Length: 200
View 1: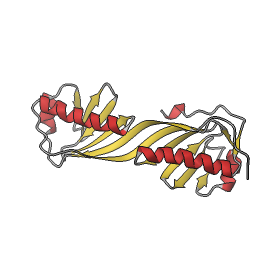
View 2 (view 1 turned 180 degrees about the vertical axis):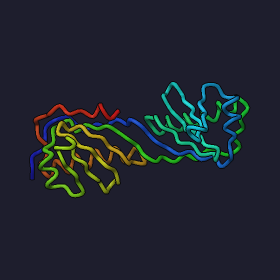
View 3 (view 1 turned 45 degrees about the vertical axis):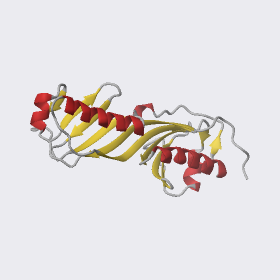
View 4 (view 1 turned 90 degrees about the horizontal axis):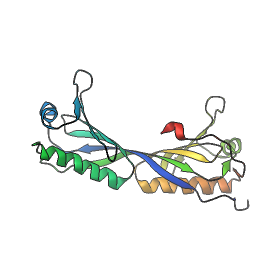
């Protein structure tokens, strides 16, 4: 059994939540464009209307079917509050939303840090469901099955986590990969300088 790895506890930060919102009523996008300030609607270029909030920075793509795609939230509560703000803004400008919005999270993207280095070659050999082609991409791609997420793992211990549907799944994935790599003796003290900043 490998000894307990040094380094701090693994951490994570949610970078973006992508959600679909359904309100079960047809929307007149031309009317919304006329009444609501600072929306973008060019049906010749794109069938949806673009609505942006500044704080937090949220973007909603709104379609005449009553469906929306909302991106940019950093938490589930921020997502729900942003959807409420969008509907409230519509109501304040005379656009009546008569049905309750149904919000479904499609994907949570997070950054993570194991706070200790990873021997990627060793991990690629010992883990299942991995792809590691260092000549093409410096990170190891690991498809975790519980929870069902994809992790991009770098030798520095930094990670990108995608595919989660709930915030709890991100936390679980980070804990699981740390414990798995520790058990497989793939954690090392040396850190390298790859970062995940380019993804965000």
